[in-house]
Every structure is written in C-alpha cells, then in structure tokens.
Length: 186
Image 1 (cartoon, rainbow, N blue to C red):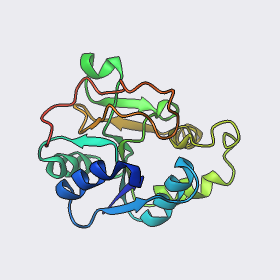
Image 2: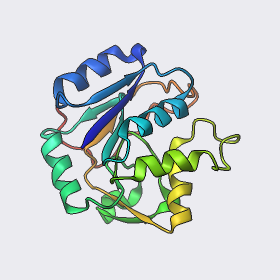
Image 3: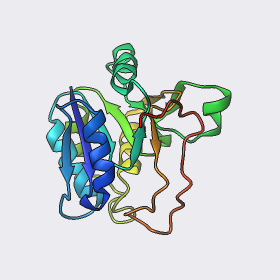
Image 4: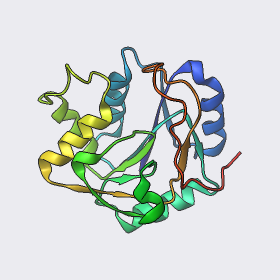
C-alpha cells in the first residue's frame, strides 16, 4: 500500500519530521506546480489503482502511527477512512460512519484500491472546480455523495493538524486541531 504525502518545501521542518517517523516507502510529492488541487491530482496519479493513504505535511503523528493505521485499515480495507476529524461527535460518539457528502479535511485519509484512480477521473466532470479550485476534500465529498457511499471516521485521530498558517488561505484559523488526538510522536 502506498503512503503519499503532499508537501511544500517551505515546510521543511514538517517534511523532515515525517521522514523520520514514516516508513521508507512513504512517497513525498514536494512543490507540485500549481495549487493544492494539482498536488492532490498528482497524488491520485501516484497511487494508481492500488490502495493508498493520502497525507499532508503539516501534521504530527500519534505514537505507533503505522501500527495503528494498519490495524484500522485491515478492519475496513474496502472503505474510505478518515484519520483526522474535528467534529463534536468524535468526543461523544467516537468512531462511526458518516455520509459521504460530509467528507472534510485532507490531513490523513485512506482510499481503497481503485478509488484514487476513480476520483482522478471524476475530477474531469466535477462541477465544483471553478467555485472550489483547491477544495480537494469537497471533491472527494461530492464523489462519495454521488455514489451514496459512507466513510468511516476513526477515533481517536491518528494525526494532529499543526498550528501553522495555511499555505492555501492565510485567513484560515491556526486552531484547527482534533480534540481526540493523543500520544504525539515527537
């Protein structure tokens, strides 16, 4: 299974942290020309038809990340799994299915075999391109919604969003962290 990290060289400290803690097979796509959507499309191409974990570089990992990640994927290898969430239900309900149209956040998620390729194809017909040119999570949500497919939110979150300014939109809050993340790997 591929592990693909979309990264910007301005975040060298984040990239170095992930290189220290992720397996050597992790593939870094650094400074893909264009915007966040272009980087995501490149990641989907890199995944090909196999299963893949898609990640962003601005995260911290939980302790024993790969072990916890693989355990969750092995329970649901044919389902989309979100490994970062900031929803209130995370603390009250825990792990659960959500409707595909509610998919949000792209810090770390799993796509089963063929899904990356199918989402790449979907981009050509996605009607949200003009309104959301960097909305890769919104595109995934629309694709899942069109299939009437749910996805699994794994609690606790296995990654934590760092308190850094967004490189996509500097007006976004830096306070976009999961309330369920635990055991940070430093």
